Image (cartoon, rainbow, N blue to C red; front, side, top):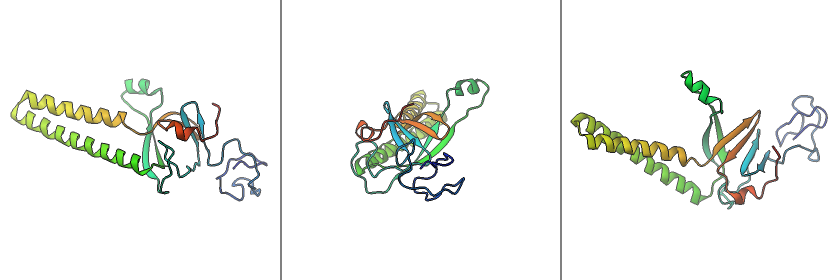
Length: 185
């Protein structure tokens, strides 16, 4: 909630401004929607602090109220330059995202399958290196590569842009985005 006196954006449930102590009322106008979430093109826009409704981010179906802890990583565009210097920079953001049972179960099943592929690949690679069997080495390396690549590609949400306390996230279902107010860039 934005303070009408000093323009500081406070928590949505705050009664008083953190900076100036001015009482905040529910009629104070904010530049951002209640909950600090909105839609921009095909992205979910979050502004800290955010609060999600109890609706699945993928299909907009009701959730049971418990939100899944997810850690997203944001790699800025200038990372290619830092990679040439031998360093890599990223930001980790922890979100509690609402998912319905179907999407929670699907993510869990995919994660288990990818973990099994990774372990099988490591075992095959180790046995192949120990026995000098090129087929096992190739098979193990292929399984490791597929599991790592699939895990990166199947990440449910991807941060595409960060600007101060705002972030734009892809991977959210159109049904969910259509219920949010539009935020211009």
